Image (cartoon, rainbow, N blue to C red):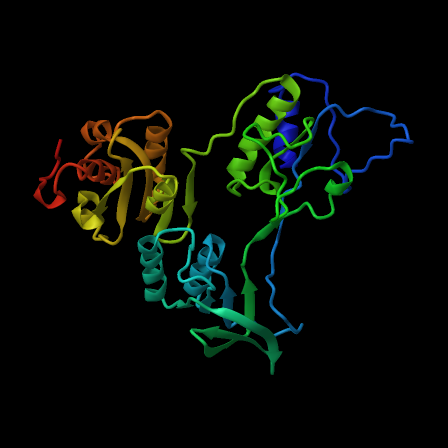
Amino acid sequence: MHTELCRVLEEGIVETKVSYREKTGMFSFDPEKSSPEKITEFINATGQYRVAGEIPEEQGEGPELFDIIIIGGGYIALEIAQAWQRLGTKVTLLQRSSHVLSKQTADVAEEIMRHLRNEGVEIFTGLTFQQVEEQEGKVVVRTLQNKNELTFSAEQLLVSTGIRPNTSDLGAEKIGLRLSGSGHVEVNEHLQSNISHIYAAGDCIATPAYVYTAAYEGKLSVENAFTGTDRKADYTAFPWVVFTDPQVAGVGLDEQEAESAGIPYDVSRVDLSDVPRSLAAFDTRDFVKLIRNPGTDRLLGARIIVHEGSELTIELSLAIKYGIPVKKLASSFHAYLTLSEAVKLAAIGFEKEMKTLSCCVV
């Protein structure tokens, strides 16, 4: 985050007199002490730190890596689990929620779990964690599943249970800077805090925690703070990727999010068994799913589980951002024998039955 702010300032993207300091510290205010310099605007970008979870544990060192337990079912846990499994490690993944990627719909989660299990990753969900301890050189994890005791052991343990904003030592309470219950700096759509000259960006605010969103927020907050612009942060067309194989990718809303927002929706899903490129590649696993508002024919979102499926998100992100009707996606050229045809076929699927279509449909 420091790097992006400095780049914005040094490259003249924002023309202003400003200095920056990279230093550990906290907010303080003493009205009886004068300061050699007056700070007119302040950007907080203190980021986040890893969360180990509320699990009683005993410290100990196991032998050289042979098998591993991963606690957590988010994107980092899945990426690491698959990588270690492919390197020959026996991986057991333990998840508290009913399925991995708990914020996604069940069909997405179940599809990627099926792939991981087929590769040998053991996945257990719906667990309540009781204790982690070391016994005879092994890490032992004690859990409950539907009131039944389940105990797991391995030589190594990886905890991937989330992150928290790095704000606890900021001294926010000393100046009245408002934090949420989770510790995030509360900001408005301009990334401005409740103190008008303090802005925040990156992992210390409750926005999607990715490097490219942090870069976006760093630039936007600097422009708003130092140039008087009033730009709003907009994540409507935000794309994201889980770098498993196949990749899990998405943009915009899914069905659950549309329903929660009170937006009417319908869904079109194309399985890769109906996509010529996938047939030619002998890999017809997985699917592309589009969600639209049937009243406006505007795309609301998409969910993709496809090898290198993230490459399909940009077209869909632009369609959402610029309000391109789904009918336009359906009638636009998509080169034959490319994965992008999955988007076209899914768009057509809102109006026509997929199984009745022929090759190179227009």
